[in-house]
Length: 599
Image 1: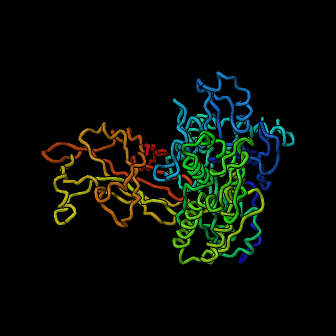
Image 2: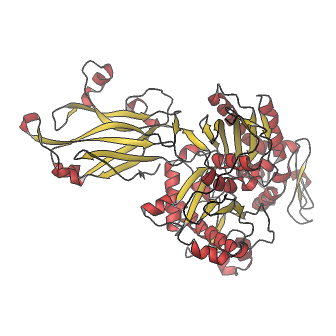
């Protein structure tokens, strides 16, 4: 029996044919790609795409800006590092027609995650006629092209490899912890639109998702030596601080042979990444320069702050300087001396502090949710993790909670892309915690002795079978906070009754989640603002029409009835739902898809 591990063992790829795996990490500010060529019987290795067009540097930490430049007609002019070069080549007329799109990832974020710093200035509206899915699709096209070109050029026999695996490429897309089924559905649509996968059941199986927290865990298991000897019940906290979000995830090792890891707290996610620091700095500068000529330079100063001070700030006792202009730019009362803006350390600290507070709050939530498991070690990755002020302030706060915080030394800004690849073939996380309470809205038989039923008596109606029913009941299928293994199914029976059997040719069940604080809730109108219909799962049951036996209901009218189950699979990285019924005693299942509605 294995009792400790100093290094996580790697398994051979057990597939039957060669395959290419591409992990595309679209970040709010920067994006990256990692890949692996999977050969049967060999141990897979994660590799990075370490050069992109328009870049002078080549290396293991290579990423590209998440930016797309559109022509006036909506076509893509340039992407990533090539945007800067393309803008320099614009003639005067073109400068007025092109549109540069940044931070487009945040347009996909759930409304429930919106933060105070997000406005039209910090996250500009998308170009007319473009949706977030359109922009993500255009960006995916570019990342895919770059990855193919890099593999062809850098791998031995690269062109031959690409030819042999052209139709055998799997993709994995990462996303913040706080994104749910709707955002995954949007990303899947973008991947289909980009031509990465076809819109078929086979194509569907070639695309997987992983949270940034889970991807970062796998990265740390590959590269971090500070874990020491891992034992059963060892726990770890992962903090992924990126451009858009700060994600926190807590895990525990439940087995070592084979390695098995489970979530021990609901993953946290806050829109307080490094872009929020820039947004607060720009808000400050606009107020500081109000009424002066320098208000027109705020965007330029903000960019210079983003490139310099934001990355190097470490001491609130020292003034910070932003070199932005000409020597003739001189206004000491505004802190401007010969083109250089002086900011006090306290002012800069105020831009960072909300992000620190959010990170500390999420850490405490993870710790409290993980109880009685005591988390003793944590790792911080992501581009924002490189800022010393944030790291050391957070480390000090966590040490007071008895948690040691470490920062890997190798390319933490590529942690998600690399970890996504590792998560695909290592797949250590085998149980996850449900984020919300899921169920469906049904009509329930009226009970004249039940007080809650009596209060809703005016909503009562009679079904085709003659039964008195009350609408608006919430039938819970799985509760928030439940630890779910990947293959676990949760289901509830439902009944659909109609006079006309043809109306039973298709079954539809609304998939509903409850995000409120009431533990046991039976009626939607008890907390209606916290209920959200995520979407609908449907089933083609047209074959049933000829198998149904008419029954006699009220007033001697015939009716037809179908009994079915709604089945949830919540333990995987992407939630699935089925409708299940029987035809001649044989169980039938609908496709495992949810048609999501917009939030």
